[in-house]
Image (cartoon, rainbow, N blue to C red; front, side):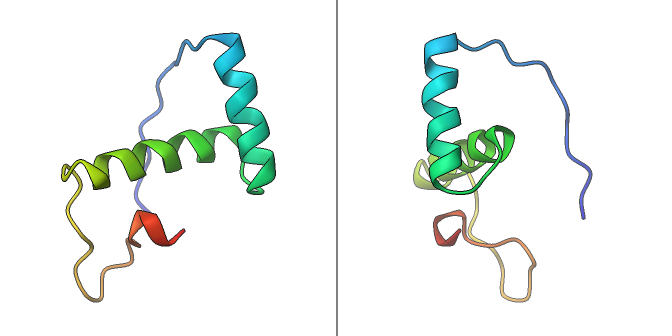
Length: 63
């Protein structure tokens, strides 16, 4: 597994609560939910290339 970059994130408490509930609904941690949202946005914007065949990286929209 590739090493992940850590960084502090300051977020509005109201938005955090929304993400926290959303994550619980989808059985994810808040951290995983934020990464999922960002990955989907990057993919939809064409900034994240599609996974190559045989690559372990999944299409973020298939999660």
